[in-house]
Length: 343
Ligand code: KG4
Ligand code: ZN
Image 1 (cartoon, protein in one colour):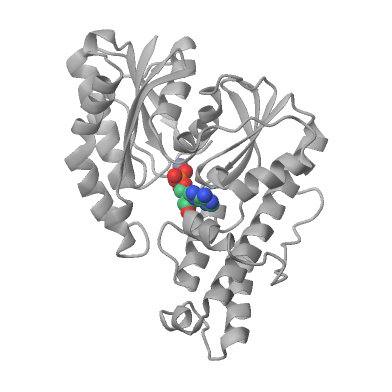
Image 2 (spheres, protein in one colour):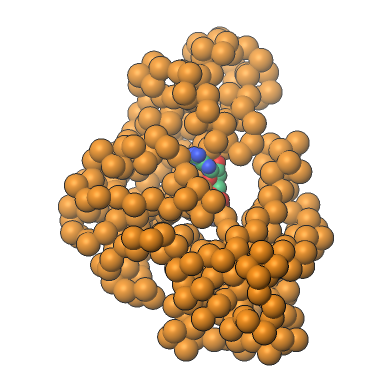
């Protein structure tokens, strides 16, 4: 079975053709990073407009690269939420129209859950029951999967998402958007023990996260280094930092986030004893996080290629396959975009 997976929930317009939920025959991603870089983050209206311009060319490119025509496609899977409403509307309306025009069944996919399915696109597929740490710019969730579509939430962030913390700290340090890769790059040249930042105390029973205090601690520490009163992040702060401040803070912050995430994952592993553990979402592309997780978890870890960690259509097609196998198609006329779609 070949599905077209379509993703437009944030600032990537992405489409892929996925075979049997496990092989991406194509994976086309039109990133808007260069557009939003100028503003230091995603501007929702600009994102929606950009999706409109490229969504059909991206779909056609995904079909072409897979060597497929519409006759070869058995259905369309699209992100229904959560995400930016304007961005979601472009993807869902496109998918609805394509489903009606080409007479294909349509599947509505939850973006947060779909990130975990990136790990089904690798040769050694993880087995159920499965524990997944899904961390990106919009969310940080610990998920439990009894089977492909039987999942529940074990813990989540109480404030900022992990990727959001990377993005905000990057801004404080004067590093370019998106923050994850640029903090990771700067960290390569820094001492990760230079600063001891606090870790949130949420109780030993909780599998929740919190990153807002860490972000504030970074600001306070930098302020103490350079003097001045930066109660809120300001453009003046990065100008006062030396390259060593930047690299050392990037490395120390990254280490702290990785220790928090890997620590929680280990705690959940011990409590629930899954057969496999995966990490997913944009932050799962972080090499330091992969290292920390592999060091702490007593199970062999298999990581998805980077292109499947950040937003992409292949993970949507992979989850769509499970919905198709379960006969859960949705009427194209009733599919609605839901910016706060729950798990
Ligand atoms: O999954 P994703 O592409 O989009 C959302 O669903 O949010 O994740 C984007 C987030 C951004 O916050 C970005 O800074 C972060 O993932 N990210 C990383 C890395 N690559 C992307 N964070 C840490 N290290 C990376 N290498
Ligand atoms: Zn995402």
